[in-house]
Image 1: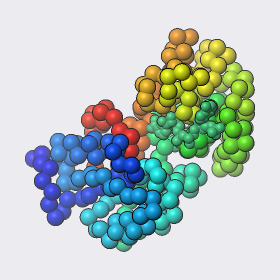
Image 2 (image 1 turned 45 degrees about the vertical axis):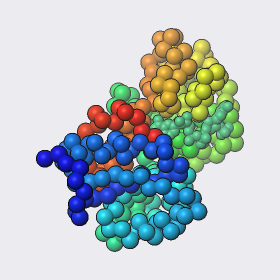
Image 3 (image 1 turned 30 degrees about the vertical axis):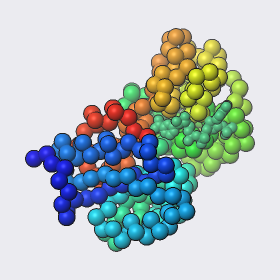
Image 4 (image 1 turned 180 degrees about the vertical axis):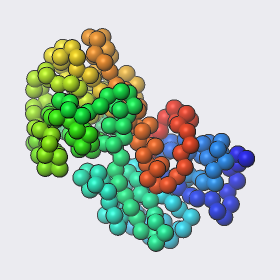
Amino acid sequence: MPSLTITGTTRVFGTLAHPIDHVRVPSVMNPLYEKHGIDAVMVPIHVLPEDLEDAVRGMRANRSLGGLCVTVPHKVTIAAFCEEVGASGRRVGAVNAVRFDAERRMHGDNFDGQGYVAGMRAGGFDFAGKHVLQLGAGGAGMAIAFAVAEAGAASLSIANRTLARGEELAHRVHKAFPGCITRGVAADADPAGYDVAINTTSLGLHAGDPLPVDVGRLDPATVVSEIIMIPEETALLKAARARGHAVHYGRPMLEEQIKLIAAFIGTPFPSFEACSAGTSG
Ligand SMILES: NC(=O)c1ccc[n+]([C@@H]2O[C@H](COP(=O)([O-])OP(=O)(O)OC[C@H]3O[C@@H](n4cnc5c(N)ncnc54)[C@H](OP(=O)(O)O)[C@@H]3O)[C@@H](O)[C@H]2O)c1
């Protein structure tokens, strides 16, 4: 029977952040727990960066606490407290999910890249054998580059404003996945000849931002993919659609990531319908 009653057996999950106001995961998860009669609760955990060590000590001691969604600014620092960090978290150097085992050891991993690839797959796009142009090499871009190579892309060109950052990422991706030909290229390099172009830059968040790529120079068959969620249709997607390109929106990356994180931290996730309300951590 659906109930939000908290008892001694209720499993507690948390969303760790600072600031905390923007965090939406509790408002997504708790109605799901209630609707499906699951004995769990998701709470905000507001911790300042300088208090993280104390908070970790307290969370380890709290045996009701099953796991955490981790967001800004703790993704890098909390990784250092984890006894085990998964392959994706190690490559990216940051984790966005932590679970506590029976001995209260912490296991962390990063699901940005897997979430993106799963979102594309859900939209019918498979990276196996594809030639990929990735725009941007920031935090999300780093995770996505590894995940795209892991998903079997034939080649990956990373076009970043700061060329050295793109080149370094390309080098690291190639070391991890030698089967994928990778290179860093100038931000204005020729974007022709790719199966898909992915925007992982923050260009498109604000009205008036320049496009991250000259859409007119893309091959007509190039799929255009975005990870920005707000606005839902960025200027890039609008321009690409107007020229007849197939497009993929930013939201599925988050939706798939929430499912992956829920499975990892052990919080039940019975349905996704309620998540359309929007989440940011
Ligand atoms: N859908 C999702 O689930 C999801 C998840 C995470 C992030 N995101 C979105 O992804 C975007 C990037 O996030 P992030 O955390 O990776 O940010 P980040 O670490 O700050 O990286 C920003 C990237 O954008 C580039 N960039 C920034 N301003 C630029 C400009 N004026 N011209 C050209 N390039 C510019 C940066 O290039 P430089 O290296 O040269 O600085 C860098 O490659 C954000 O819009 C965020 O909302 C979406």
